[in-house]
Image (cartoon, rainbow, N blue to C red; front, side, top):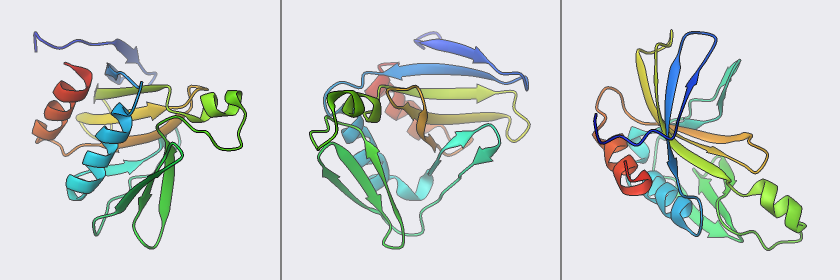
Length: 156
């Protein structure tokens, strides 16, 4: 795709190549993006941390409740929930802890060459320590949803 604005490319030891399309994390952009994903597209996505040696591929059986409090977006299914610090946190944490906890980088990605799936389309968030917070996987091979979100939120 000639209009793609790849922010970075990573090549992994297992032979995969991942192209990242960065999203501006300032303001409430990530809050709006995730709220839309989890309220309108919850049946089509899979979410959870994906790191070497562990993959949490969580799918939703019903629409989760999405709320925001003090910078934390909560995704609540009723039986379980998780929190993501996606905006400014003003709680009892120090300025340094608030900086570490808040999403510092977000990027849409496309990974090719893996052993589990030929191509994976997703969104990944990292905190201020460059630790992965969450990965959202989009439906494959129907990439329209990923392309729409990437175009609107990453400008690519």
